[in-house]
Amino acid sequence: MIYVCLLGTGGMMPLPRRRLTAMMARYNGKSILIDCGEGTQVAIKEKGWTFKPIDVICFTHFHGDHIGGLPGLLLTMGNAERKDPLLLVGPKGLEKVVKSLLIIAQDLPFEIKYLELSEESELIDMGDYRLEAFRVNHRVTCYGYNIIIDRAGKFDAERAKAQGIPVKFWNRLQKGETVEEKGKVYSPDMVLGPQRKGIKVTYCTDTRPTKLIAESAAGADLFICEGMYGEKDKEEKAKEKKHMTFYEAAKIAKEANPEQMWLTHYSPSLVNPNDFMDDVKKIFPKAKAGKDLKSITISFKD
Image 1 (tube, rainbow, N blue to C red):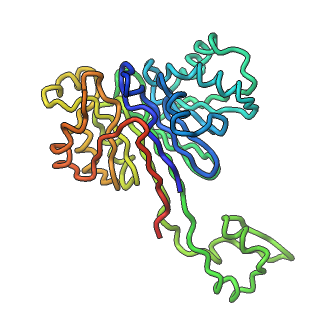
Image 2 (image 1 turned 90 degrees about the vertical axis):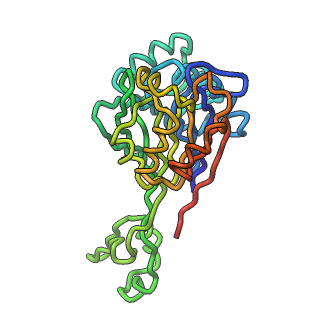
Image 3 (image 1 turned 90 degrees about the horizontal axis):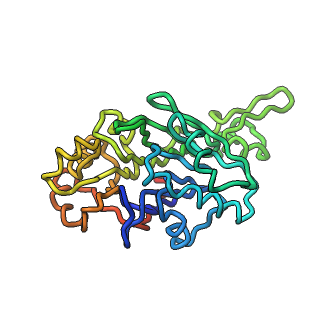
């Protein structure tokens, strides 16, 4: 299972009850942070989570409301005696931007590794899960992300017995390993059924609608998508600033058909997102208005 929390849902500027953009997911003892706006540290503490197990921080782009909370977070991670390297992922120029911010966060006790994105779509193997970055359409280079957890087929003990596979190898085969002993090779396909449905979480913000967003979010268990404006007279402003309205996000969700969609990255002028949700749900009934610390646990489905 994976735990997902919207740490902040605001765009442009923080508000008393709405921090700037960030989302954290926790899986198998590791944490994945996407964006790090002002207030991210406070939200993590309020959620009751910790900073030390953050495995990777992904950035959609380098506007201040998405990366301004990074220096303080890195300092806090250092003060928590983190020693393990930290991977940062983001558009080309990431290392230059972060090193500029590190002027106010010097002498960190851990190494920072950088992975800069340049292709339209890139897949990053994180071991027990995968990250997929896909380019969107904002005023600067910007990416959305998929967190993908694959799930192997069900282990068939009767098949293993019938083929005389030693019990001591069953666990390794179930984990996808190929084992060889005394000239005999045992492979996972000998004991595993068809691959089962895994888990996919899609996060996308600061963009105009694109076909690639719908393709990337197709069949997601959770699609977190920007809805900058709920007011119907703000469509032209959304086009000008290269953002999306609630209704444009809902149309993408209708095409992608995720299990549910959460809206996020609201304009400071948007007081209550729920005021507009009735019309949004006419387009995509499984849409919900995100809010700070909105959380979900997503489990594997048999």
